[in-house]
Amino acid sequence: MNDRAPQRFMEREQARSPVSEAEVSRARESTSSRILTLPTDSDGTEDCGAFGWLRGTKERSVMLELRKRTGNIVAIGYGWLERVEFDPSIGITLLVPGQRILIQGRNLNAEIRPHVRLFEGITRHRVPWIQEVDAHMGLRQDGPHVVVEIIQV
Image 1 (tube, helix red, strand yellow):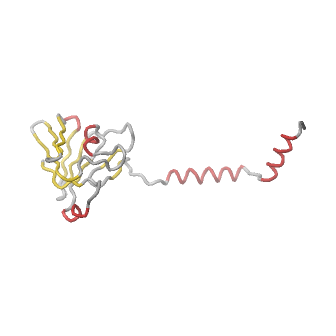
Image 2 (tube, one colour):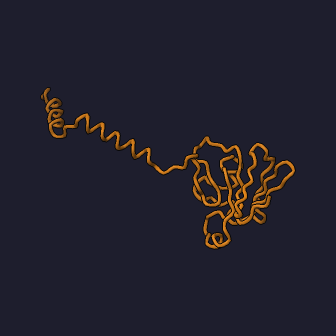
Image 3 (cartoon, one colour):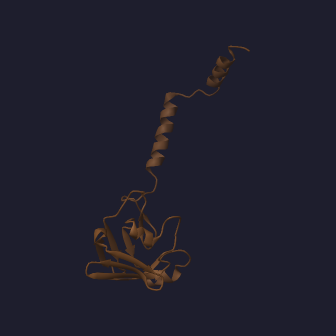
C-alpha cells in the first residue's frame, strides 16, 4: 500500500475546489440573513383564524383576549379561570368568579393541525386571543377550520 495515497488525495481535492475565507464568510452571512428573515410575529403567536396559538412549547399566555366583531375586547386573566367546559351542542364555557362566558361556533374542538385544538389550548394557556368571525366570513368557513360565531360575556 502506498503511504502517500491519502496525502495525494487531499492535495487533489484542495486543488480542485479551493475555498477562500472570504467565500466561507459570505456563505455564513447569507445563511444567517435567511434565518433572521423568516416570517414570525413579534410576540410569537400563530394566527389560526378564530384564535391565536403560542408557538413555543413552553410559552404560556397570562391573559385571554375575547375579541368581539364590534371591536370590543375583554381580557380575562388565565389565573381567574375556575373551570373550562366543552359541550359540542353548546360550545365552550369559561367560568370566572361571578361570570359565565360562552363561546359558540363550529368545529370548536377540531384539530386544525397536529396537537392544535382551541379547547386544549385554553386549558394549557396557549391561546392568547379568540375572535368572533364576521357573519359573511363564517359562511365561507367549512372543513376543519374553527369558526367562533358568538362570544357571550
